Image (cartoon, rainbow, N blue to C red; front, side, top):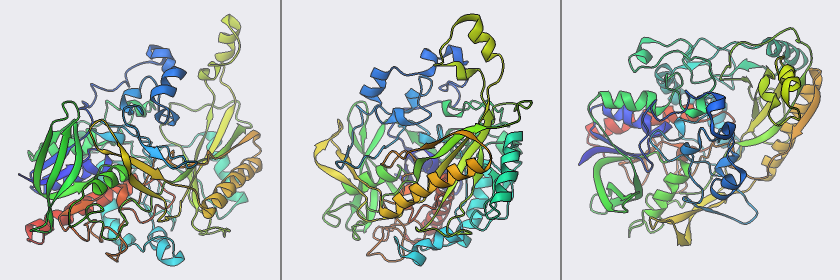
Length: 560
């Protein structure tokens, strides 16, 4: 019998484990994937020429086993062991509505491979549902989250600049990374031509100056190698493997079990609470049950919905804590894959030093300082870097002539990638397949998610804005990227067990606690009532720390 069980070991699960164990709770972390050892199981020590096929996975293998996962920018021969085989972990989608579910099943989850952009949601974001009527009103506001953003930023280590923007609150930052000379030029041109738009350095989870609390865990300052998706042996960027799980282990209150696929939550009708979780061993298929006083679901938005929907009982025939029929509904991702790129003119005598694992950010301006014909807004991530010798891959040429050509740097390239807010809609949902099951006997996930009219209008405007800004800066060879027509590649799935004020319309209360099951907490992306347009991982961290704090307090006070 444990005090707490945490399902999932990634961004949210690691934080829940840290906070619960530091408050004295004997905590079990269940990870459905294999064990990964920090450092020893990474490939960040390999040089480009040491990678199989120069990092390129053969087309036949990618098509057969990694049809979805291979669409992620970070997929390569150096990282494919961190992504699931789609053939081993199938799911279904509605016809004509593609959803790319990007997954990594192993200890640490996607916190090993994430893009590390770390932004706070603002008061504007927490008020949006109430103001425009889309989705459920958040039961919390920015002031509820601010101290928890402070808390996780200090521990994780977030580098960035203080910019004083209402739509993107400042935080507890380590020193910012530097712009390239061409980026400084683009920033000056952009802010002169569009006074309501700002360009800032990205806020990223990298230790630009490691602090004592980081060094105590063996983490050191970033080495600017930009090999982050392979895992960082230095612990320079934040992951649950380098930070939260080691901190939890140091308390002596942590137990981790890997290869443990959670089938469902056990509900006790006599107490009205969850009594534990049912688990299937990934290798032997042996079934067992773990008991605890509190259960945290941190299995990812879709994974958590699958577990809840599969947790059926007489009290909850449609899934645990699902009186509202909102479990699985309101699935959202950030609109991504649109934007533009081109050649940035000038600066032939300049070059940038190092491989900065970060870019710049243009925070949301639509429906903040500039009006739009749609609700919500978007931001742009990007950078201006000079081509190096890698541009020769795939180019025609052989021998000394090609080698000599690649000894000189290429032109400066600029890219703007838009990330837009997808409106929460109840018909975008996750359900369980009625007949198909995986090899462990669990019903497959079925995803029915489409773009709405508002989403399509936003996508169109993103492309127009990107093209216009590059033209303003004098760029040439401008290419506007066409959106792929689906969702999922933002890798920011959210909303399937959202927070809300009304128990009949939402799943969780303001403490991330299930309305219907007081000792069940959900703190991963499933809890989100809306997503803003910012990368959400920092909010997941803060939600998990805050939820664990309240759960421990409620348990001590005898409230759950």
